[in-house]
Amino acid sequence: MTLSDRLNGINLYLIGMMGAGKSSTGAALAQMLGYQFFDTDAVVEAAAGQSIPDIFASQGESAFRQIETGVLAELSAYRRLVVATGGGIVTQQQNWSYLHHGIVVWLDVPAAVLQERLAADAGRPLLRGEDWPTKLTALLEQRQPLYAQADVRVPVGAGEAVGAIAARILDLVAERISVNTDSAVLN
Image 1 (tube, rainbow, N blue to C red):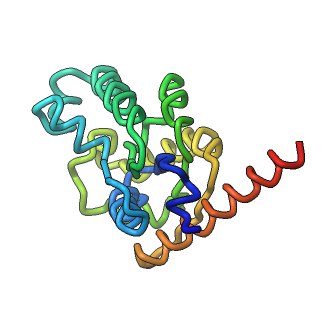
Image 2 (cartoon, one colour; image 1 turned 45 degrees about the horizontal axis):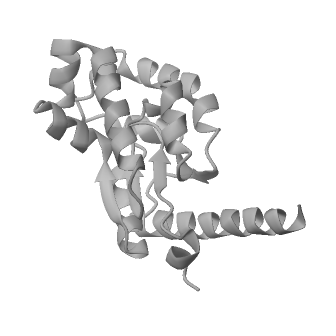
């Protein structure tokens, strides 16, 4: 029985900081599982008809978070999806009720690797200004306890190939399903 069969249509939700590789890894995972892939940031932009930086500039972060929660609520109603979420989706308590409709996978990337990946990306509203590495580290420290609530934690190092990360996720998810199945039988 394949992992896709064992998942029985349960969605996978990728969480982690901006720059963690959720979108690229999510697309690879979806292909491996025969699932559809969605990136909540792309869906938010399509729904709002604006880029995320424009939403932050014109409506503020709280409006963005409301749209993001609506998108997550809609996606969680479907099955057989891999969903790459925005880095801050875990900060809204309500979102956890939607995330728990599936298996939550945390791509845990060290701050130094995130800084390297994001150095050339000026489009991140939460990282505006010259002290963005300090802001990034502070956000990571603030969010780590939230990310740690994930069902599966996947440490990701610098230079790891997306396919290798996706394969490791599949192994860890399979392990998680087996543990849950075994414990359900034992209880």
